[in-house]
Figure 1 (cartoon, rainbow, N blue to C red):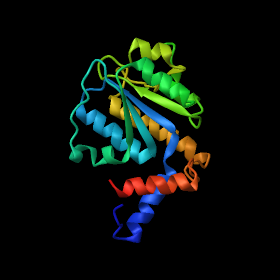
Figure 2: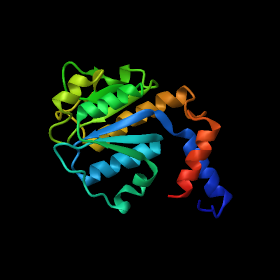
Figure 3: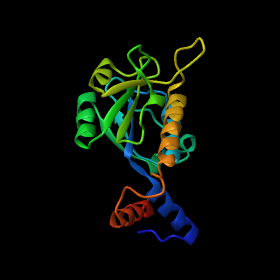
Figure 4: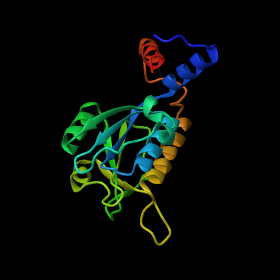
Amino acid sequence: MKIFTTDRRYNKIKQVVTQRQHSLRVVIENIHDPHNVSAIFRTCDAMGVYKISLIYNDEVFPKISKTSSSSALKWVEKDKFKKVETCFKSLKKEGFKIYSTLVSKNAINFYKLDLTEKIAIVMGNESRGVSEEAAKLSDKCIYIPMYGMVESLNVSVAAAVILYEIQRQRKLKGMYDKSELSDNEIEEQIIQWCDK
């Protein structure tokens, strides 16, 4: 285990670990632009997302520099899947509701949902969006209301908009004030982070 040079750094890590939202997952499906992936990782870290699930079956996971991600890759856990079905089954087994972002008349305005539940938000490819399979296997498809001529935001911007609303709802409910982990789990996580 690495030794902290200051109490301040230890306290910062403990605070961040304690506020991590294990009941919130982001799923990236075939996003190919490294800047978009990097921006999503940075936003996830800032919002307290514990883990990102990566589905790459049509694209190759892009090479991301530490500079562009501001080391967020280091602080957000990730798991990788080659199939949508495998990823979604894993999420369902953990008790997550799955909401895929989709521009569709059947999608629900995400502001109308309770985003304090155990949820996974699926963000799709820049050109194609989420796959038909992902949309079909989701509990709901959601959209961000827009009032201009274009139908959608950049995927990293869309992720940020959704995650900030999730943070707002969870903050109001006090979910960042108490950890979802036990004291032992918090200490284990701190030890793991000491080695990063």
